[in-house]
Length: 210
Ligand SMILES: [Zn+2]
Image 1 (cartoon, helix red, strand yellow):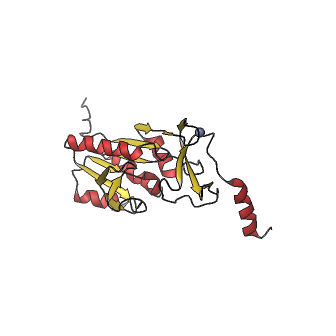
Image 2 (cartoon, protein in one colour):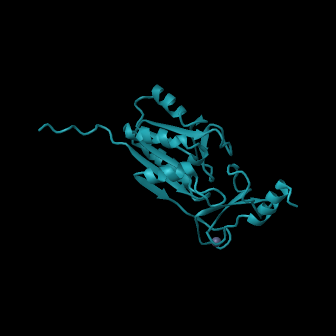
Image 3 (cartoon, helix red, strand yellow):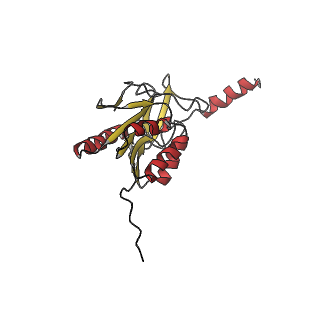
């Protein structure tokens, strides 16, 4: 019996996740530097929506940076890979900013034998899972879940608190609102607050109930 030959490349998906200020981008940058040290052929992407600190660099909250290709859709990754077909590892930051199409794109790349390492938030400011991250967490070979420190009680934080004028944001606020320490802080489950009360009044106002 002829044994089928093993694939010469084995794809692997790694997801780095957690709340804001947990060091996700720091971990991604560490893995990028490791790959560079090992002389791997790599390519780095970030979404165009995230312009917090730099348009062309991945920058962590503690100001470490590395140059990345800015894309607005997951499909653009394939076009860039055509130009660099020998790429071994694909890095991606701010995974949660991409639409769910990114799940298909990354999954296919892994099947084709690429290594994909992506970092992103697992929950939005309301504590609800981001679809793209949630699906990829289920499909990943490896998950690095990081935690931060709660700004209220100093315990382990797994959630991102959005504050608008120092008050918890409304549950009906837009899910995507890039911003750093001015409007977000890490919180634990007990200290995390979403302003549902005012939201319901706001909703009623909108509907003309009041
Ligand atoms: Zn807390």
